[in-house]
Amino acid sequence: MEKFEELINAHKDEFYRYIYRNVWDTSVADDVFSEAILVVFKNQDKFRINSNFRAWVYKILTNKCFIANREISRRDEQLEDYEDSYYNLKEKEHYSSLLENPKGFLEECGDEIFIALKKISTAERSSILLKDLEHFSYKEIASILEIPVGTVMTHLARGRKKLRIELLSYARKKGIIKGKKEVIK
Image 1 (cartoon, one colour):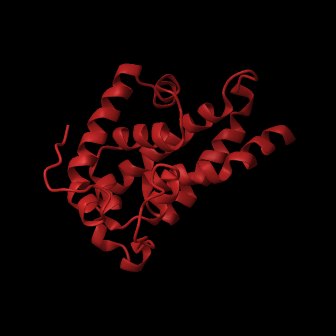
Image 2 (cartoon, rainbow, N blue to C red; image 1 turned 90 degrees about the vertical axis):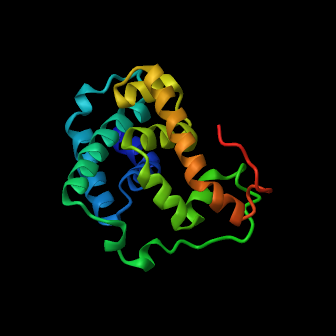
């Protein structure tokens, strides 16, 4: 039991960030995190000792995020319903460290990034977050999301394309992309 608690404590910040980036509301993220950790503890006897602990927990987290997002969409909450100050994340003038620290970039980006991420499907968003921020392999993501590897690759490609299209003008405005005739592929 103590070893299990140590594993959870070692990754709790990472798990919470993943949940938050999927539900975008701290109160919902807190609830989802609590529910997920409770499920992890209740099902610790189902965890296979030599398997990937992070992937096993991410599967539980992802399922809880899907449920939370489905409930949120049923309530039909709009972005404007949230307090403006909540989403006013600190902006940097220069994003030169984007490639070295993508997590830091996301934490300091403007509302445009938030809005663009909200526009893509939960499966696409989850795939992108698991691949690009949490560095899981395609196979691990497929296991976590319980979908084929090819579907993970499709979600990644489609989600990234949608984000490129949505964020092109923002990237130009912030100087991340220079010039006016960037081709979106």
